[in-house]
Image (cartoon, rainbow over all chains, first blue to last red; front, side, top):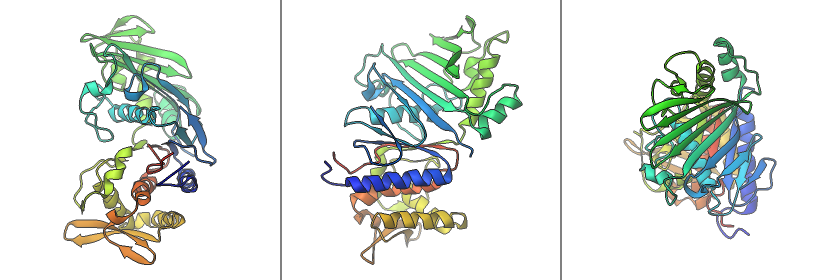
Length: 46
Length: 324
């Protein structure tokens, strides 16, 4: 559960924005996060 | 579309990752997810360290543009100096770089070919081992033992120099014969393919708001580092240069989605530029009054705009400010 800072919805918005921008311009983005967003990008657990 | 893609990364023995290490496989845009202390930042820093050192640097560059690690010991902090640190990357050949370069020097590569590179390093005796792969097949192995260099594969022979050069064809040069020709060419292709194609945004970006911003900055053009000047300076560049007009408008749209009405950088005194945000129809100067969300996100948005097509961009802790 997120308690402060970004909410889960905001995290999803941010990741989707980044994904959209990367696809539009044409580059690859690899991000890291403590919680998994609900979005179309690939999720890699470590 | 011309793209360089990172499809696999292997990191062992580096900072939080320990000797077990981690291997990730990637297919396009991705989020690496793990709890605190799982090694996400170590993984990204290892990749940044390798990439900032490529192009013939001797050893991994500790005081670099993308990532500053002050002492070699910091690479293996808390680990056994006899442990081997391994940083391996696998990049898919793109149409723009590798394929054309390969053809121009007589090396047949197709789109989709994968070039792999491993840099292994042991702190105790500064031993180095570099490996080069093409489509998962070993092409060459070189080693530095003491101050001497040896090729171990495809033949056992002496190198002209100790192979400390990171991701550079010179590391694979044998003293005589043409045993290194294939590795030399492939390494040349890899180095050139990745030229200006890697960008890194570290966790330290949160520092960006902590000071007033001088307009005269001398910071790397290929990443948003921990020095806060960079983001506001670049924002001022983006909003004033005509070539960025389209992406600046795009940035404004993205920011609106996050509930911020506007954002700009402007002069507050000669040679001083500060950032402003607009909330509830009111401009708030300077920008360090912005909430944590904006402080964490603005460097990302600025870097998204500045990253050119075909690149690989790493963003550590996209959820900065969020607590799980």
